[in-house]
Image (tube, rainbow, N blue to C red; front, side, top):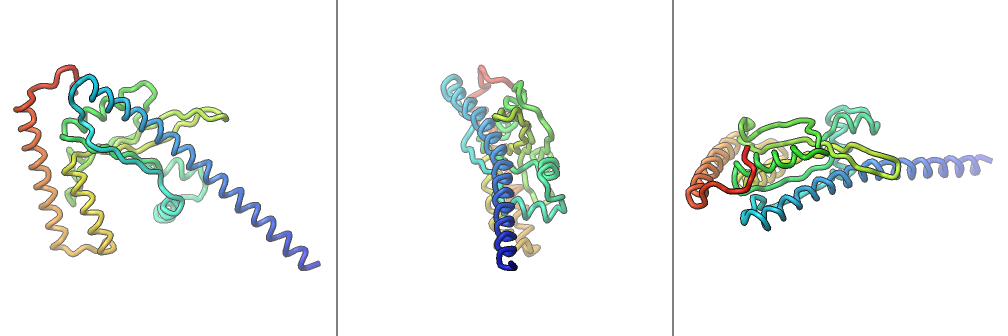
Length: 225
């Protein structure tokens, strides 16, 4: 009798775990679809620039949806209730796309072109280009909401879009590797070097943009801010 009861408990536990897994996968699936919608919009802009303006401000595009382990870690760190509604409300970077631009001006222009589209809702903007973080980090972060139409109806999905220049992206990549190597306990002298490198990257961005404008002049046919 006891063995039969144990078998039943194991069966129920297994079914519950499978149900949780399926629900989690469906939750993340919404973010994959939302990310695909934004990627399509960026791809259209990129192709239009190439075909119509003889100038492409987009150097590189990368995207990701947080892995289950990464998402669980963030839920624990932030002390968020472990239910999907709470996670959906509190975490807006589950889906993310990074757009690396040629120049600072391009980052703002692309952000404007994306966020002015009718089916895009802007939830938040953090302009770390105009106001860099203390460590020198620079990037334009925009949380947009895009509709996804499933068989069950419409779902509005948040996607974090980061706009940055090549120099900003190179610096951020190096900073991430250093913080990972030192398990976030980076020596003070190395932090100072990183800040100096960020200042140098910012100066390089400004110089390259001035040179670009001198060579090409104004860019006809492209909406300005």
